Amino acid sequence: MAKKQTAGRDNLGEFAPQFAALNDDVLFGEVWSRESELSPRDRSMITCASLMTQGVPQLEAHLKMAKQNGVTKEEIVELITHVAFYTGWPKAWSAFNLAKDIFDEE
Image 1 (tube, one colour):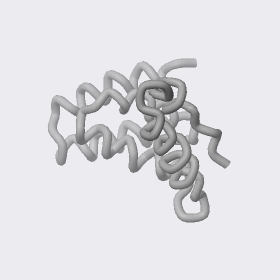
Image 2 (cartoon, one colour):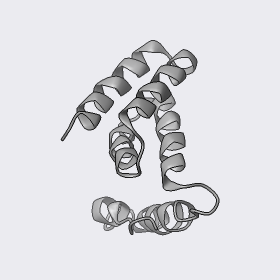
Image 3 (cartoon, rainbow, N blue to C red):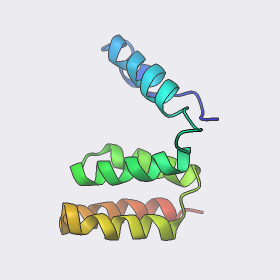
Image 4 (cartoon, rainbow, N blue to C red):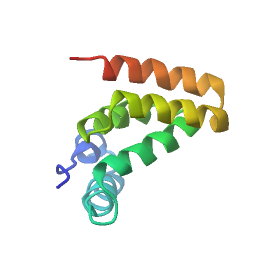
């Protein structure tokens, strides 16, 4: 079962409480918890691919989550390599730099 998400409330709870609630309760509380439809590992791979295509900073947090959800270094390298041809070489370099730091941690 997915861990209870509080990042929305922790970071935006006072400033944007409705957005924080939707992030924590709907996106992570309802969608990510539907493990019979897609495992957290598979959701992590899909999410990392999507965020890589956008070049957004949230990729770092989701790469960390992917590692926690069982995505291997080899799988993330293959994902980034594959997506590089669709999203662009600079985004792949950025993603590899993040992934290298995260997946090389002890």
